[in-house]
Image 1 (cartoon, rainbow, N blue to C red):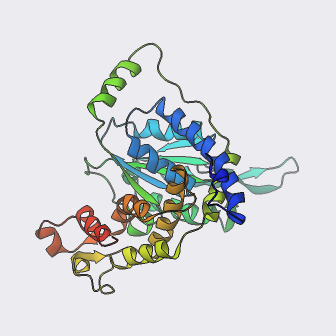
Image 2: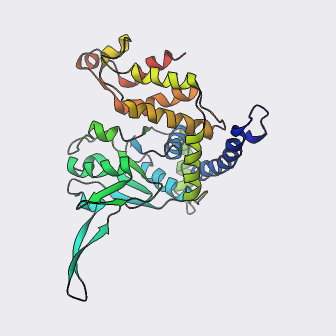
Length: 336
């Protein structure tokens, strides 16, 4: 039975249900297409899809050789998005990303400036090893990630829609790197941890990627399809219980504002953008799961990737062996 055929769905929800049924077919095709290239890592694939369906940016953190770059390339192809890759290095300059103005002389001898767009003018920008670029270069993404435009020489330039930044980061080899500032971390809807695959998945990787015929990603939807699904996600209803649960979860992680004893271990906590991210991501996860509205289970599953890069421990908490994932798990338990 499809969502539109559900007898419990009435009124305006029926229209959303029909749109959701069409969206679910495309999402299922996209997941299958990704699965032809990326083996195992179901949680990573789901979180990456939820990030894009919610219209956000993702920070993929994992050791070298974990297929982070391959995942981003595959997502771009499967979702029908134009994508570009920028390898972040210490000598990379902001103009290398957003573009610059060049002085040209016309046939009439008059000189004028012409804007030459940089690689950020795409639908999926892969910022590979983003923490290896200087803070000045990292800051070139701040306006783009929030306002979907860049300003060069005082002139704004709109970016293509949809627009997503999928950045990768290596959790080791920190020498010569520049930690992302909190303001930039907050612009990533999720931090997606890419862990080692299980034995069965790694066996499949060995067999299917070292032979003559490796899997190739194929488009499963278009950029217009993705934009339509993103609009649908924002129309999905959210019950008052879920809204209150989001507020309880986010606000309980703020020091000085919460009476929860867990908050005393937190140096700084998530702001309103974290609550917005949790609301959108929970809607997207519900849709991926074939539901029209999010549940507390969605919040529990998304709390860690949405909140962990928006929090920091106090010195005493670190000395006592506390961890951000551990504190988030305890906060989630209080949701009931």
